[in-house]
Amino acid sequence: MSTAKKVSVLFICLGNICRSPTADGVFRRLVEDAGLGDQIHVDSAGTGDWHVGKAPDERMQAVAMERGYDLSALKARQLQAEDLDNFDYLLVMDKQNQADVEDLVTELEQMDKIRLLLSFNPSAIKEVPDPYYGGDSGFYQVMDLVEGACKRLLVQLRKNHDL
Image 1 (cartoon, rainbow, N blue to C red):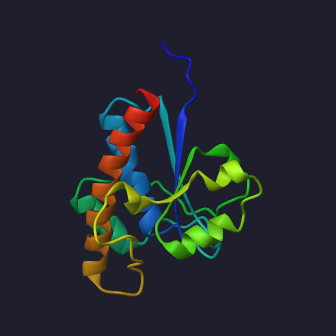
Image 2 (image 1 turned 60 degrees about the vertical axis):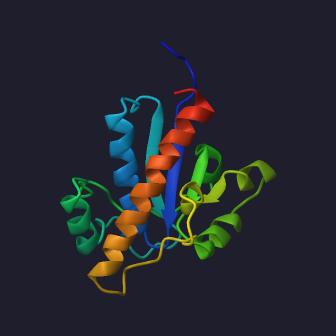
């Protein structure tokens, strides 16, 4: 058995009730399905604090459940400065979240951990749009983007960390 350090991934959006918990739920299941649950730690957080302790948005949960992802056990939390040290990958949903996380950086190596989630799924769309104030189609778009990026993220982590 390997004594290697667990790889840790933190998904970050604004309120931690739509995009980042979706990425958390999707990636967590991909990791479990690959038999890597003991080697990859997954979590999510928001840059804002107004939803702390709340479950993911009901509309996002419904779309996730349609695709077989149960987000109901997740609870929103706010990003903490120590997360920049405690996680290997800080994957943000958009450039504003990226700027907010970068504002917390105190050491140069922390900056290297911060990436847009969609950098793992090259396409014309670079940011996961916030569906909160839009219609149902926005939640489906988030799911499509997140699923594609998370699948490619897992491939990359397996390669980078010999998993």
